[in-house]
Image: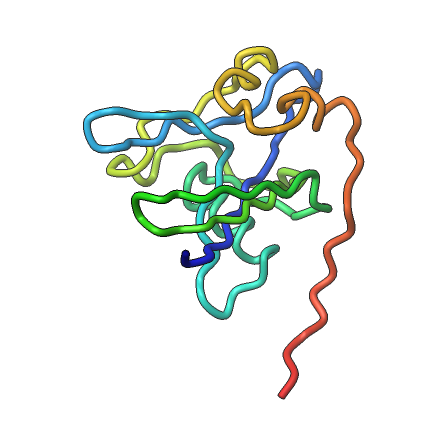
Length: 144
């Protein structure tokens, strides 16, 4: 199994009732997720979540702490992704589709619906929003 690090950015509206999600193209079908994607070689987790959110939504964000870490095994393709969900704060930009070949739509989704789209979190995405407990992510730099 090949390990892959994947990051998600949790963006919450002002009323804390909705989260920003993307509708991902999957061949002839689709699924919904938080904005995010694979960490590129030489990139930190923070750099990856900032880049992925910008690429998928057009928003400039600042990464906070890690809200959840999930793992899975995908037997068909031999991958073992580890998913890091970050709290992110919008600092600028505007929501727009810049990757229509990957992302079909960007939308604010009520928490109850988001829980159904991404049931992988204990207590759902709602629990990440309500408890807002973050693990500190600290990049220690490069060593030889």
